[in-house]
Amino acid sequence: MSEKILGIEIGTSIIYGVVIQKTRKGIFILDACHVPYDVKTHELEEALENLLSELDTTGCTASAITISPSMAFFRTLDFPFSSPAKIRQVLDFELASVLPLPSAGYLSDFSIIKAVIPDETGLQYPEMANMVAKNTKHSIFTTSVPTEIVDICFNIVSKRAVQPDMITVSGLPAAHLLTKSYSASSSEDHSTITILILINADEITTVFIYQKNILAIRTFSITKKMPSGKPLKTDSFYNKHLQQTMTALSMRHGITGERANYYVISSAPEKYSPEFNSKILKP
Image (cartoon, rainbow, N blue to C red):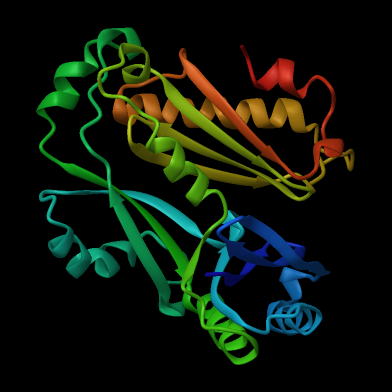
């Protein structure tokens, strides 16, 4: 039995679309295209319409949409309880004070960060172990997407193709797959942080994973210029960004990146200097 699936990836300047067919013999690409647009001028709705007019979505029975991490907001909150039902009851209220323009409305979800208590080999400050172990608060990692974006996606795609089965943030599916590779019995896995780097023409997104937890997601634009007007030097700027985030994670969770596994997904390798790997992705 075969199934046709529509996939859409919404970036900050380009929307990609693909129609695949899943059969017993494998997965085949039937159609694909992309449409440029300007997110700053609110062209998303028109761009989605143009994309779907170019794709043959006849017979699609499922669809999935990913959006750029720069369109979402990520926060870490602490609760005195760990019940998912209780957290969901108060989540919107707790997020209202930490999200920009809360009156605009957001669709939010969360994952509970299971106890992160590394052994001393993974601690920059071993004295933190007791503090972390005695901490009775339960941390959660939240993702919030403006309802305006979600509504546009559902309305346009449902009208022209098939109602989306999933809307998520680019990189999160890959990050969740990486969390499944963690082995609690491995001393190396127990003290190693995984860093997933997503590179495209406009931005770099970094996902920080420890044990089975996504601890942080950071995104920054690489189209910016220095005050002098010169192009931003991606290598040095990203390295500073990486170190600042690692310092914050060290202070909050007591872990460091002294042992790190790097995974890179790049759609624009030509944007970066040959020294990027040696400067950033340290062996």
